[in-house]
Image 1 (cartoon, one colour):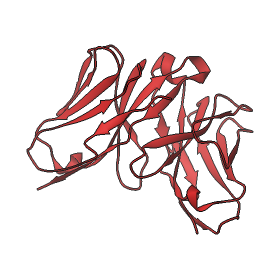
Image 2 (spheres, chains in turn brown, purple; image 1 turned 135 degrees about the vertical axis):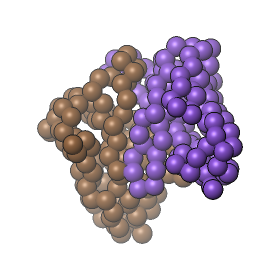
Image 3 (spheres, each protein chain N blue to C red; image 1 turned 180 degrees about the vertical axis):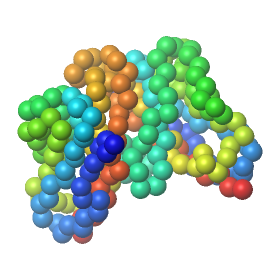
Amino acid sequence: NAGVTQTPKFRVLKTGQSMTLLCAQDMNHEYMYWYRQDPGMGLRLIHYSVGEGTTAKGEVPDGYNVSRLKKQNFLLGLESAAPSQTSVYFCASSSRDLATYNSPLHFGNGTRLTVT
Amino acid sequence: TQLLEQSPQFLSIQEGENLTVYCNSSSVFSSLQWYRQEPGEGPVLLVTVVTGGEVKKLKRLTFQFGDARKDSSLHITAAQPGDTGLYLCAGAHGTGTASKLTFGTGTRLQVTL
C-alpha cells in the first residue's frame, strides 16, 4: 500500500543546475499538488493539477515547472536552481476537490533539496 | 491571500500536562483540517471540522472550529511523548477545481517524560 511516493529523498544541487522531482500515487486520485516547506512558514503551494494533462499555478510558482502526462505521476522541475529554492518539497494527492467535499490530502515523505 | 497564524510556534511540556494550540485567520474557510507531521515524514490528517462551532474529539485531542469559521483550536489533555510532532492547521477555500488548502505556520510540540 504505497500511497504517494516521492523520489529522490535527498538532493544537493549547485546554483544553475536543473533537476526533476518525481511524485507517483497509486490511489487513482484526480488532484495532485506540490508544496514547499520552510521553517516558520508552513506549507506553501507551488503548482497543482486537477487531472491528467492539466496544471495550474499556486502561491509560489516562480522558478518551477510541472507536468502531469499520466494521471498517477506529477513532476516538478527546476530549470536553473537558486539557493532560495533550498527547501523540503512535498507532493500530495486528493480524490476530490478540497473545499466542496472536504477531501484530505495524502502526502509523500518529501524531498530535501539543498542548493549551494 | 488567505493567511493562517498558529500559536504558539513552539511548545515544550512534560507528560501529563494539558495544552491548547490556536489557529487564527481574518478569512472565512469552508472547512478546516488539522494534520500532524513527524520528522522525515509528510503530514497526516487528524481531523476535518466543517460547521461553525463544531467540536470533534479524537481520544485525548479536542478540535473546535470557530463560530465564524475563521479560527480553530486543538486541545490535548494529558499529553504523552507520542504526541510529539509538528501540528498544522489548513483551511479550505475556493470552489470546485480551484479550491485549495492554505496551511498555517505550524506548532512544534515536544512532550518529555
